[in-house]
Amino acid sequence: MSRSAHPAGPRHADVLPEGHYSAPPADLNALDPKVWAQTVTRGDDGAVTVGGIPVGRLAEEYGTPAYILDETDFRARARAWRTAFGPDADVFYAGKAFLSRAVVRWLNEEGLNLDVCSGGELATALSAGMPADRIAFHGNNKSAEEITRAIEAGVGRIVLDSFQEIVRVAHAAQSLGKRQRVQIRVTVGVEAHTHEFIATAHEDQKFGIPLAGGQAAEAVRRALQLDGLELIGIHSHIGSQIFDMSGFEVAAHRVVGLLKDIRDEHGIELPEIDLGGGLGIAYTSDDDPREPHEIAKALTEIVTRECEAARLRTPRISVEPGRAIVGPTAFTLYEVGTVKPLDGLRTYVSVDGGMSDNIRTALYDAEYSVALVSRTSDAAPMLARVVGKHCESGDIVVKDAFLPADLAPGDLVAVPATGAYCRSMASNYNHVLRPPVVAVRDGEARVIVRRETEEDLLRLDVG
Ligand code: LLP
Image (tube, rainbow, N blue to C red; front, side, top):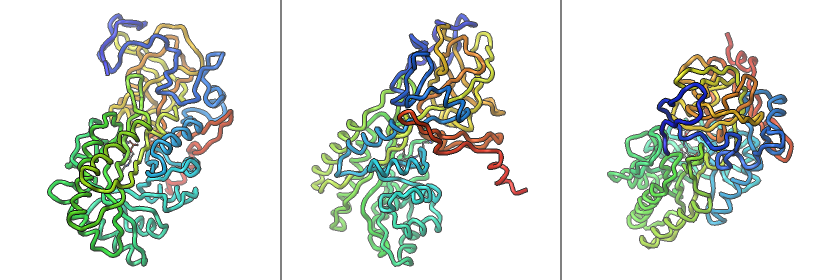
């Protein structure tokens, strides 16, 4: 990504400061389809519409800030993943990206499975009717209660993350008189090219059991000995927001290597391999994500090739995309509160949300784009930093972006690609209320997660 100071366009500085930005876009009113949900477009009056509804109407009806989710786009992406992998593979949507009961129903209808990683996500999935055998249960520290609940519910697989958990799940299953289908999550030793906090396949971290030093092979030995477990496969998740397929290639090579060792030692061929999620999306026009069919083709080819070389039957492949399905389908709608130009630096644009509805910028140095959506403007581009209302200078939503210089309080701006890891990581910092998620489809909008209220806050505070 090119990131250099650019001389054009500011209203209050001749030379722009160092920052994370490239040139201002040729047309500030244009909406790059790469970063905006499928049905987002500008109406004749210049206001942005989604699913046929103008953002002004959404703001009036549901208030700001609000996450606006394009259901048509969500379903289309879910379907694209499902179709790309076909009937001989499984797509598990990673619920951690964003989960609600409506989402569970959409997934169910579109034929996707679901990955959950806590009792809360499991409860949401079950309460919205996801068949338990299509649920995978993840986590590096599942509680005894969560394990029991998952087994009782009949989840399709539990992904084992440690030696201790192998024993815990086996005992829990046995005491319930069941045999639980499990996968073992391994760390393959890949350095994924992504932020340190969201890379998960290098060995020095909390997830999985390292292939290195024969630890994963030992985990397999133990799992195979326990009556309460049916070992169905090996799982690898290398990280998140990844564009480069080479990490998956190395992971598949190493996981298939383990499958081969298992065949040689135990005489069995495990029937499944899960390559996790982690496929990147476009947050700005500089990002170039791959399409699901390209990803499916690449992953299937890699696994098939590796298995042929190892003389193994190709196992059933599964994947767990979260961000790539829900991320691009939503934007956060904010109202501009104050506009503060700092001479020679940039203009601080304060919106009515912030790090409580999008922690990703502060936490991962994430980059986002932003646009004025309640109207068009012919004003010159101004270098802006979109900040929230929290008592913290790190409360930044969009670090550097160009907005029209006539931006004013009351304007609506929207930050695209906030469908993943924004509502699901939202907090109540400063007792700011978490925004609603409003789903829009074919000219109709409905709240699928309502706005938090002060009563909600006070209900938890028992005095
Ligand atoms: N499978 C497993 C086992 C995972 O741990 C994850 C994400 C996924 C699938 C889905 O990954 P995705 O396709 O959504 O990248 N909060 C961070 C991302 C953390 C990802 C955690 N695990 C962020 O906002 O970037």
